[in-house]
Amino acid sequence: MMNFQMFVFSTCLLLTSMLAKEAETGSCPKLENKIFDNLVDMMVAIKSGSQISGTSNEKDRPAFTATLKSQLTFSPGAPIKFDTVILNQGKGYSPKTGIFTAMKAGLYLISATVMSNGGAYLKAYISKNGVNLMNLYGPKIHGGTETANPVLHLEKGDKVSVKSSGSYRVYGDNYSYFSAVYIA
Ligand SMILES: *[C@@H]1O[C@H](CO)[C@@H](O)[C@H](O)[C@H]1NC(C)=O
Image 1 (tube, helix red, strand yellow):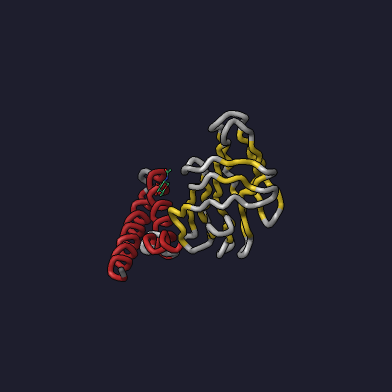
Image 2 (spheres, rainbow, N blue to C red):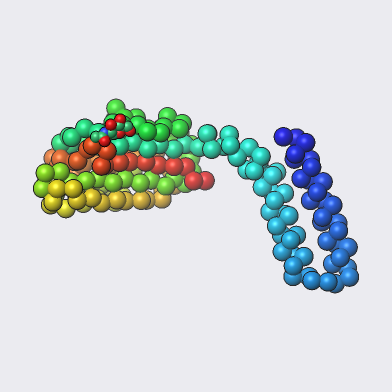
């Protein structure tokens, strides 16, 4: 790792000084600026560790995906418990409560899809700390879906869930799902 980093740094320095010399002669200033900018970006990326340790960052990144397997009727204000967990990096999601808790402050992309069941409509909403942020409606047909994809800034400990607005049946069999990923 260190050797690679040092190699990239010295290559950057070498190219930078070469470009600086060429710039004195005044040839292709636009192209040089572009190359120089790319080199600066590269050095910044390496310094911040995003290229070298990208793989371990991916594993640390809070992210989850869960689907609803069961056919359930939810009571008003109750979180829909997406019970089949496909991914749960950082263990922020609980299938027992249906609640995602941010273990780390930052920007998150949330996504939820609900499907209506048995020809009845359903209403649900994205809840952040108990506040209704966004509504979801499943039309009065069997298998009507709606998706919401809010991008939210969450503080550590903030809770996001999909709540049923009334006593509605939600179609399971993995046709309804909930996920979130930490973006930055
Ligand atoms: C739902 O997904 C789980 C695993 O993700 C799988 O085991 C199960 O068979 C699926 N159920 C249906 C009804 O598709």
